[in-house]
Length: 139
Picture 1 (cartoon, helix red, strand yellow):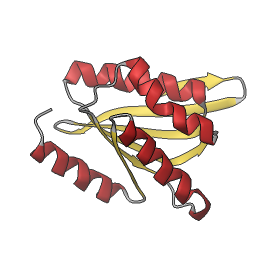
Picture 2: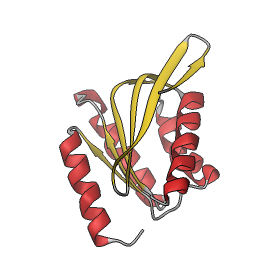
Picture 3: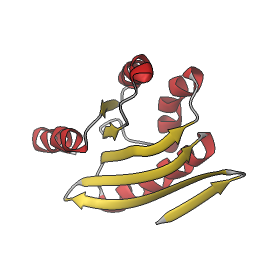
Picture 4: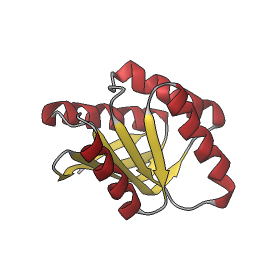
């Protein structure tokens, strides 16, 4: 498990090759800009070594420090890090009624920037979607 500390904020994450071609990131703690970038960098390096760009981000155990502007900038960070546009990203988030519009906005912003990102409340649904992507596309 990789641990990253930023002042009083702490994010923990672990990378796994959950099954052939799908990289899982299990994260817990507080997700802020700096820790998010570090976590994405490490996941991308791991993906490059495996030549696999299907990502399952399990964020059910995080608290996010995200403003609307930061959500809008996340796809820019993906581009800066060199995340391939052919990547498929499934993010499992806790169900938060007040955040549903923000979640939909994030999916739309990613789509408009050329990244296929889907948000899920259940890990099984996220894995099912990634498996379908794996079967339908040559990555």
